[in-house]
Image 1 (cartoon, rainbow, N blue to C red):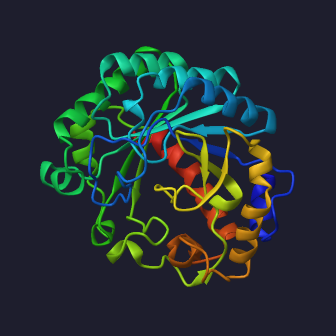
Image 2 (image 1 turned 90 degrees about the vertical axis):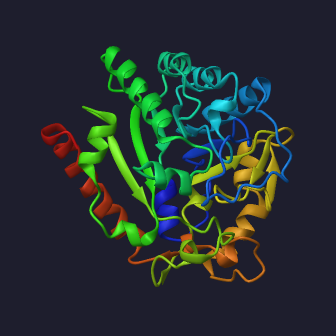
Length: 322
């Protein structure tokens, strides 16, 4: 929690480690989602197990809590994704994967569950074939649903509460004002279905996407959370400014040669944090047009309210299935 207080008060993190790492298995992807800005211009490759071990050892030693095996690309393209999860779990790190589910075969599902994966979220940006075709070119709703349903079945057969399964739906802002079609979700995924449903509006990926996604989310300025909360490590060990920097426009370190905490508390990142705290972003690539800096209320108020909704959601989940 120390990082939160530093962030609320706009102070540098000090000795507090990042809460999580985005550790990218690969930046290759099998889809071309309309709200993604990842470019094939960045060299493509796969995270090597030796580099993963180096990063995970440092993360565990520093006190990092969570490893999110995604950044750009589709994590399930990595041929040893389950081994990466196992490596993190051995070091007592919480593990998360975000996937489009198109490559989630029965064998991969079994391997990920056996590896001890804590959470998996599925990007299914529509509940009809037409919406999927428009929002996630290359995806097929029937295939995604079949794979997720099979994953849920395998999870149920283990009699375990984990991995937590989240259905993430990114929708056009005009659609978010409409009630979520929960009957359609139940018809697609059955009972008990995903543990949680998360509806999101598209965001600008640090000002790189225009249109509706670039609209400010509020009128109150506050430094963005990722600069205090997490570190984003590409498949080749380079450290990017934040989780919105899918193309590595701002590289702040390289964990092939540097130590994790040296980068986290290094002069370059702290200088960027100081500029953001002062709202002096004109010379900062990405930060100058990022929508993550605008809030409706102070983040503390927002987090307290969200925590209350989470408690209510758990109660509803137990009593009504959603």
